[in-house]
Length: 262
Image 1 (tube, rainbow, N blue to C red):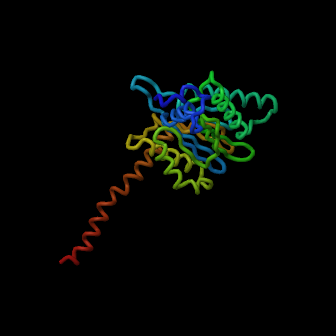
Image 2: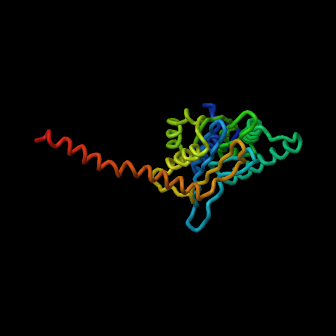
Image 3: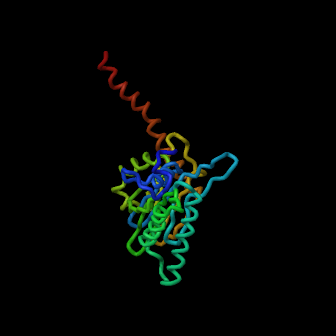
């Protein structure tokens, strides 16, 4: 994907004021498996698609626990995400050792953004080709951040990254205003539904979906696969119900209109 003479080095500006190597790293995030995050006032849910590269291999992890109050979901180069996850764990451990208190989510996100930014300003480094959804809970409440390979970070009510994430974003944009009042189970259901939107026709099963949650009086952990399967089955039942009722409604309508046609 050689674009022009200005994309051979991460520190070389184009005449249009662009760093193409950074843009390529952001493109790597778009090519990764989809990841979704949602938050209410008390909980944050992360969900990812875990498709194996081959029928003979297992899938790679896309969700990592950083601390009891923080977890991340990644999209892009999994190896880069694993390295950054280890860096985040070390930051949380060091802060807890020195201050004997959990590291605030916003402070951790800033440190991660600073680390990513350095890679856009050193000719002997390359940008991290991974985007991270950081979910956490601290004294100020529940938080959901997105960290970009460029070193930028944003806080969201709900967000989706990765391949075909636009479908999930459209779904979340229609419902995000009510997320603050959602219960724990409602957040999980909407997260799974958003992940289903990114599959675009492929069947969603618990084997290709990972869901994690953190909240008040609930440390960050993965949701059991059986629970996910039950939620997926209940969603399919609700989708099939209107289709079964439609022919009956048409028959009733036809019987009512028949006398007027005579």
